[in-house]
Amino acid sequence: MWEKIALILTIVGGLNWGLVGAFNFNLVEFIFGFAPILASIVYVVVGLSAIYAFYAYLIK
Image (cartoon, rainbow, N blue to C red):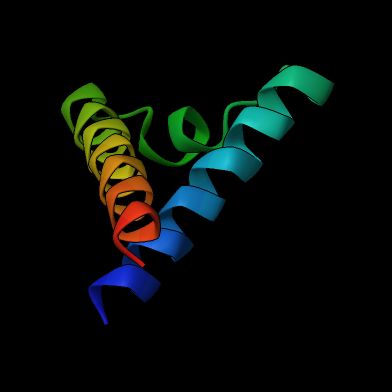
């Protein structure tokens, strides 16, 4: 279950970076721009999920 959640959050983070690179549009800032602390929390959670997904990939 945790692997699936980490994968989904990592994909969301990757899509956000794709939008930033292609269109200079940050979806996280667009959604949570009114509360920068929430945007920061989203970034941290996505980063932690990427680390977890990488760790889970190495274990298997």
